[in-house]
Every structure is written in C-alpha cells, then in structure tokens.
Image (cartoon, rainbow, N blue to C red; front, side):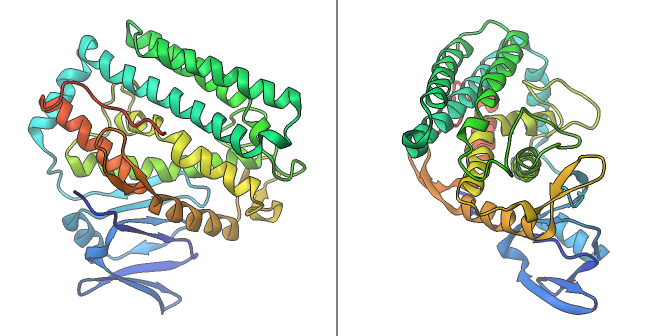
Length: 346
C-alpha cells in the first residue's frame, strides 16, 4: 500500500527551490526557509512565481514527485514531467474502453451515483451539526434536497447511457448548490453563496471552493499518473484539448468529501474572515496570502484524517483515497475486479 507522503506548498513570493543531495531546499531572498528529504515528499505545489533549479526538476521527475506551478488564486499553470513511463498496456486499455460506450457506462454510473450520494451525506451532516439552529424553512429545504439527491443516486446507478448521466450529474449539482448557502452558519455578512461562479469566482465561498478544487485536482492527477493512467482521457468528461478528463472524473466523487465539507467547516467555525480574501476592482475574489496559508494548513490536516474505506474495509488517511480509487480503477480495467467500486462516504 502506498504511504501518505507530504506535500510542500510554496507560497512566498520570490522563493527558489533547489536540490541539495537527497533534500529539497526552499530559499527566499537567498536564505534557507525550509528543507525536506525527498523520500518523504509526494508533491510540490508552487504558488506565486517561484522558480526551481533544473537539477531539482529532474530529480522530482525521476522520483515521481509531482511539481506543479499555480497562480496565487490556485489556477493551474504548468507542471514538470519527466519521460512518460506509465503502463502502456493500461493506457491502451483505458483508450479502448473510453471509446466503448457500453463499458464506460458502468464506470460513469458509479462515479455519478457516488458523487450524488456524497453530496447527500454533506447535507445530512449539516442537518446533524446545525439543524437545531436553522429556521424551519431552511431545514425543510435541505431535507427536500437530500431526498432528491437520494432518488438521483438511485436513478444514476441504473441510467442507460453516458449522456443521460451527464445530465443527471448536472441536475444533482443544481439541487445541491441551491441549498449550499443554507448550510453556511458563519458570518452571513461575509460569506454568501448564490450559485457557482468561476473564472473568476465572484464571492468568497466560490473563491474558497475553487481553490480547494484546484488542490484536489492536483492530487487526483498525481494519483492517476502514479498508477500509470493517462489523466487526459476520461469516461464521464469528454476529451477536450488541455483538459485532464480522467482527473476530473476521479475528482467528482471526492469533491463533497474533501473540498465542500472542509469549506463549510472553515466558514462555520470562523477560521476564515473577510480579511483573508481580496476583491479586485472587477469583482473577482481570491484568497489573500494569509487566507491561502490557513486553507493549506487545514487541507493538509483534513487529508491526515483517518477513515475506513468502504470497499477495502481498511483504515487509511483520507488523503490516500484518490490513489486507492485510481488503483481500483486500474484493477477493473485490467479485469481483476468486475466493476469499478466508487468511493461512497459513510
């Protein structure tokens, strides 16, 4: 079983990364700010515009350490890849089955049903944690959405084609995000949610969700590549130049668990304030430096949380789930297991 390795997040403007023996060194203005042994690191995520030495980039590629560069808002910019050595047989099977609607259907059924079920769990936990403080109207709205998602998950598991499932996924998302604001129990003068907005986010909740989704996308793509998949070719998400379709597929079932729930926790516990965000003249909202650091610390802590995997029956860190799901998908494509068991949060 793969170990849950640490990720280095570099947020200091002007930071420089280099290799020193078997260590990764982070310098700012010529002074060493951090050092970590490479065998303990699974990924490096660089915000702002730091640089990295060619020696470090080569060592990361050889060691399988994902080195990604993101904008301060969390938008993906670039990543360093070494010679592609993924499992060619697995990739050929992936391409063949992605073009086979009959086979892709069972995988997409599982992904959409699991995502919808996990969204439902987020709603149920909101009722459990805050239901007694909600108005009757708010509580009724969440209960009604929870029931609609229950039926959506059941219908998704028997849907007849991928196009229908894409539509059902969109309907479930609309149901879920229509009551997302109701689950926010923090400072309503600061945190309001009026539907998803991206490119750019237009409120603080969307800015937080987009940032967390970027972190999750990084982890899912790394997990798929470590198993040997081509992250560009998905089953639910159609091929599009520049889009990591399979990484987006893998993210779907984990968005509610890893990202949405954490966003609600940070807001409802008052761990983020208005000062942790920046609103530019055009209305775009992004995390400020201190806010981004606070979210990254919480993200790392969330990934350390232990749970019992529903299919394997083993205890593991939440941060390992993307890798385990990628592994289970590869076992299904190889024919070792009959179907892809999606991750359903209990």
